[in-house]
Image (tube, rainbow, N blue to C red; front, side, top):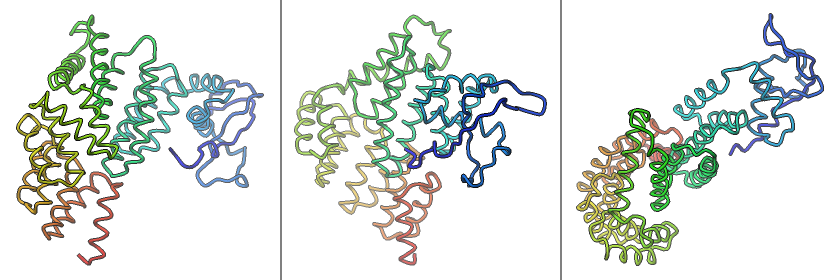
Length: 384
């Protein structure tokens, strides 16, 4: 995803031995060039081979592992790294997780790519890469960067797919890909993934699974039951989501109405109906659908309240809109989408300072949120 080519920051040199400290060195193959990571701001005119240090060479090798999978000397570079840094994999994993928590996504992605290059057979690393890209997609989507989010979702799936094709199968892959499918509203695929997870762990005792493993088994079964009880893997339900999300709302509404005829008490169906109607700006009808969704179990989902609030705003019923958004926020306290909508509601009510406070809070959670930044800029330009 990085627009610049990281390989452009590499020089190659031939040296007879690699000095690791004042007291240690080990022999290397002088016929194989070693990659050297340029110093920040360094160009070819500044390059001095005598000033190269071992860390630049190690960093250069990691860059090659991350971005040059066709390099003919990969195995050789791996062998050097294993000798010099026996705990490298653990150190890189910890660094990648820390960078992800801090939302330093570019560096985290580079570390994960280096990890895969260092040990491409480790399924756990491939799974962690998929989870990282999945999380990065969510972050971009929350910030209103939908094209970037879709691209990272696609990347995440490519790594989930690699992990699912591994032998022997790793149960955690299927547990996590199940949630990925849930996010994509692919409930049949999600059910298959969770059922596969349970099948792979069925002969493992609770003691062996540990507390977290037992929780995962219970959670997987709970989601399977929900999908079954609410017929969420029904073809009409899936078709409705696909049609509405692709801009074919009228066709999608036909499908969701077919679904609701057979499943009148499934809150997801009513939510889907409301979502399609709201996109068509039929706000009164959409409101009624969302109220039905709340009646049948949608009151545990923040999106139901969030969508309902949009309908109340259109009807100028700002008090009910705020009640809905506060309920949504109680369910998902750090949702920048909900906080942004509170900002828009404040604007609609003429409370510009309150709106500024909400948009500022969004940027505290996510400094890259373009929508909140744009609204704050408008308020500044208005002299508010």
